Amino acid sequence: MQSFLAVLRKELKDIFRDRRTMINILLFSPLLYPILLIGLGKLGSGRAETQLQQPISLPVVNVQAAPNLMNYLKAAGINAVEAPKDVEAQVRDQRVDMALIVHDDYAEISVR
Image (cartoon, rainbow, N blue to C red; front, side):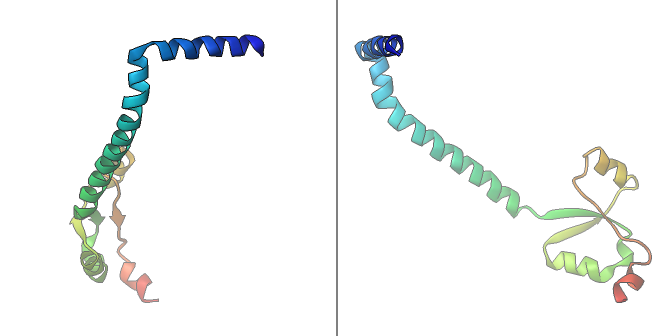
């Protein structure tokens, strides 16, 4: 333990002797870190706000099978667009985030 304290005392003596190190510790640390934290926070919140303001486009397979569902999605701010033929492969390959597949018997199932 004595050797640890001796090394610690020597290092602290060296730090306080060097003017540049003291300026960095006393001036830049209290200023730089809060500025960085505030700047990164504003950058992140600005990106999140712009992403939330963009309309959502949802590829839908068999749009005509569920007109009421499409009206509901439109009222919720979701633009239902006709999906490409290979939408499952595109979702699997992560070229499309998500897609909705409406089966032909959707109207019969939703009435029950």
